[in-house]
Length: 168
Image (cartoon, rainbow, N blue to C red):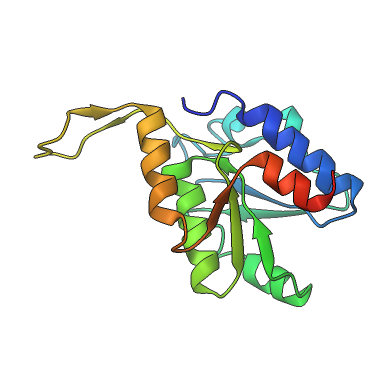
């Protein structure tokens, strides 16, 4: 997996947001099909939040069933009802759910900040017919995904830059 400091940086961001009384929305992925990786019935450990990101009682939790946190969820309505226009997105995996959610948020007009060291991804086999490689390591996948989003649909920044902007 890329980004060995993911958990530490997400913890730092979450703590700073909570200390500053800034809103936090958790997005959990639940597959509706039994037997799949993110099925709450088949694999409860894959859909339960890790202890370092356990939601507090007053924090919103949105359940998604696909890549984007917006498709088929109440996320957009929640953000609009609270007039939240600026988002900081963290999580797994950079090339899938994070990218889908960031792109969707940008298309909906939200300003998105993406801490490069608070999201991560995994090694990935190349698509059939690739002339470049048969497999890509996680750090390369992560870097390419961030490059594809930077200045197009998000401002890719560091955790330290976000914390500095919060005065933390």
